[in-house]
Each structure stands twice: as C-alpha cells, then as structure tokens.
Image (cartoon, helix red, strand yellow):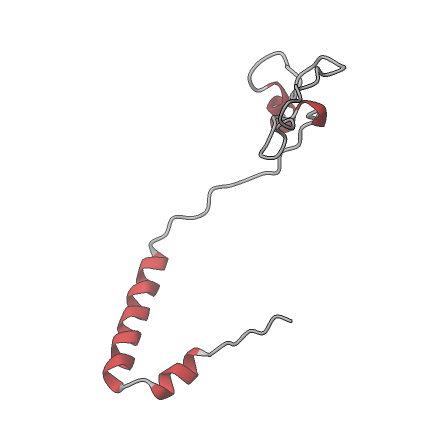
Length: 95
C-alpha cells in the first residue's frame, strides 16, 4: 500500500513564524515575476515513422549470454526508410 501526505500552502502559512511567512511571500512574488518572463513554448507537432522494429539498436540487456555469439539477422534492411532527401517525409507534412 502506498500512503501519501500532502500539506497545503495555507496550512504552512498558519504555523510558520511571521518572519518566515514574509520571506515566503517575498520569494513567491519573485518566482511569479520570473515565471512571467519565460518565453512562449515553441510550436510542436507529432511525428510518425514506419521504422522497422527488427532493426532497432541493441539496448541494455540485449547482449548475448557468455559463450554465445550473436546470431546474424535473417533479413537485411534498416530502421528508417531512406527517402529522396533529408526531409523527404517532412515535405508531405508541410505541404
């Protein structure tokens, strides 16, 4: 069982000393002012590819057992298909 505890900011404000409360409010105001200076998030879009899972790079735990050699793949290919240029798939999305 997972048990969690949470304490609201109002509960903290009631029990801390007046000096700490003033400091907390001052820091909260500074944080708020800094948050307003943040740049807008950059635009993003979802990307999709038809990568072939058989050619994904090996990850941790994919090593052959000691004394065993890696078996050759039964098929040839690559993870991502090669297009006409570096942005061959993106040109479809942008048009």
